[in-house]
Amino acid sequence: EELLPLSSPGSPPLLTIVSSSSSLHFLLLSVALLLQGDLSVHFCVSALPIVEVYAPNPPLILKNKAGAMSSEGVLRGLVRIPLEDHESDALRLKVAAENTNDRLYVMVEGDWGQLSRQQVQKRLLFIYDELNRANNKLDARVLLPAPKAHLAPHALGIEAVFSSPEEGAALDSWNEQRKANSLPPIAKRPSTAPCPPSLQSLCWGAETCENVPSGCYDNVVLGGTFDRIHSGHKLLLSTSALYTKKRLAIGISEGALLAKKTLKEFMSSFTARQVRLLDFLLSVKPGLDYHLVPITDPFGPSIVYPELDCIVVSKETESGGAMVNERRVANGLNSLVIEVVDLVGPEGGVSNDTKVSSTQQRKNALGVFCAEETPIAERAGGEEGAAEWCRLTDPEDLPYIVAVTGGIASGKSTVSGHLATLGVPVIDCDKLGHKAYEKGSATFGKVVEAFGEAVVDKATGEIDRRALGGVVFSPEKPEALPKLNSIVWPAIQELAQAQMRELRKAGTKVVAMEAAILLEAGWDKWCDEVWVVMVPEDVAKARLMERNGFPEEEALKRIRLQKSNPERLVSAHVIIGNQWAIEDTTKQVEKAWAGVSWRMA
Image: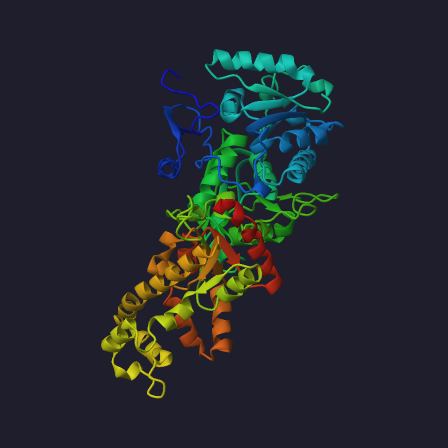
């Protein structure tokens, strides 16, 4: 406490690491994340488990007008509601959600021990559903009952509490407690919602935290992909934590289990998903031993951990619980109690009325500029890439450059073609590649010198592209393609930039440049935005076989000679998914294009 300079509004986010029985692996993950953001760090030794890890990425600064943060909102807030239903609940949650930009904690006041499991699920479902309707960009977290000693750390990042005037005395009392513990005070933000009588007499959770449900099972297990944690995940995780006395094991899908996932290349890495789960769980329910492991089969730890008592499943995956028990019995282990969580409920819910799913969230992120989303560098596995952005071109010399790239048969021309219909001049680097080695040019002579007269069409005297392709893509000559690239790429860049300068002199402010080899050639280093057009490998293969008449083996060879989708995504500012109907692609292009004029200014 003497050494810790607490984080306050305007200062870097605080990373708190508390030593406990948790593994060294988590500590190393936390330290590794220091490289990705500006953090204040607190290391301490305590008998308590890890308390909280705040998000490593600082609040995003770049926002287009459609997604701008509320200038009057707070980054992190807290709102109280009673455990028992009250007519003001929906309004209290709505006011707080609409005035919070990043994360909203919900403190549910009352005796949790008096509720049935069905009542607990129903209450959590209601809260997450209402918050998702009010602000589906919000990171909402319902604080679960925990020993009183764990409560204070939750408030480290909270800027304000949304409260009615009747709650003022309770908030003053809480701030006195915080002051006594050298914690900064939390501001009051007025709420127009009526205050339930039960909230006027409680001291902000201090008394109610002693009534902690003991849980039902010592050791609980559940599994899932947990990409882009949404309200359905939070309900499942929170319910699981409430049912657990000691240890909650979570299997996180990886490897073959992701093979058929839609937009799998767009998924967060295992490490990122693991850390986000820990961040959520440790903030809403500290005090448990959380064990998060990768799984590459549908069962994971559920059929090998002998100490397990219970498995938590959603209603949609209830049959999976029975399959787990069959395997456990075959392995000589006890059967597990199967607890089913209804993510929808009789009146709709977080997975029904609001259509929340990780797949839909990945789709929604297509066509979105990277600084309005989770940094694409993280989504592609944590490498440095397009997470930071600024304009690179000099407006006096060159137009603003939107570079369109992607793998073979991904649909780059479809995207650049639609930009052309929006009035954007398009520079096609593939066509410039033909022009670069036209007969009589310096590049023509270099190509013939490098690969011989056999690549020249005797009828026209021009380079025979098919003959040249047969040479450079030959497995017997691995050095041929790099040699051709070293000759042609500089010539293409020179031609492209010459065209751009002419367009800028004529008054053009923005151009699109279609270039399959953009990243390989390093041209992204002088373009303002990189749009990556992406399709799954099987879609690209089918297109090549139909369009070019390639046999399957040849189609796959051409695809795999290029960068993979994940390798391209590291450098993407915008990702366009082009495996569906043309109308879907068009919508993504128009979504991405809508922010270009704002960004280039």
